[in-house]
Length: 252
Image (cartoon, rainbow, N blue to C red; front, side):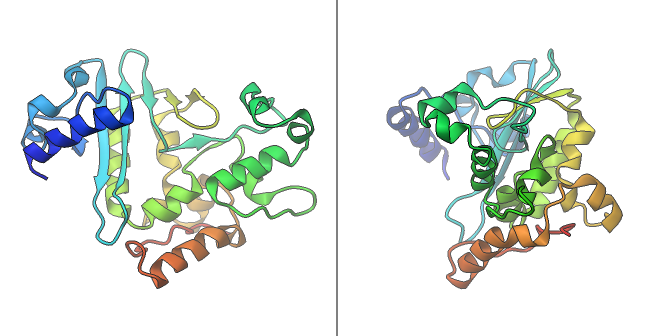
């Protein structure tokens, strides 16, 4: 994309999104070299604020409908990592009450149903609504821990493992944080660099089965069936980039 085309993207986005678009973030860490990728006049004016560090994941994949992308912001004064989808922490409904916002869409009879929250979580992360002995194994595997959402393991990490792995390494090595603020589920989360890295243990090609079992949520191989079938459908119909990495590694 040329610089003129980038400038048009920024102008058009401001018009169509209904919000001011300050600029474009370059892939990777911001540096002098990034000005060769994104000209200075198209970078957000606040980007040189010393209180922030930005790390951008952006991978163009042939055949994919769009890139694999995300930005994280590290706020130095508060030692906080701000993310969109990178990781989530699913709160257990037995320990945390259902949030009031749900009452704007559902009546009390729905909200009081003990299956409401497990169903909501499983549908959001694309795990099957499989019940076993009165509980949902997929939901129990995710609850109350920092995890990489299964849908992103299957769709993003499985197609761009090297880029995601490098992105995570850059974050862990350069930013010393003790809390994570996410866009979904529980937030803020008390979590360090090591806990963030642990959520991506499935990308460690040298990890033993024992260490993977200790690090990753105990999602059974059976509960990956929905995402597995979606990836098969995408591949069979040539609807996206091929899967190049075993996103189910460590399943039991």
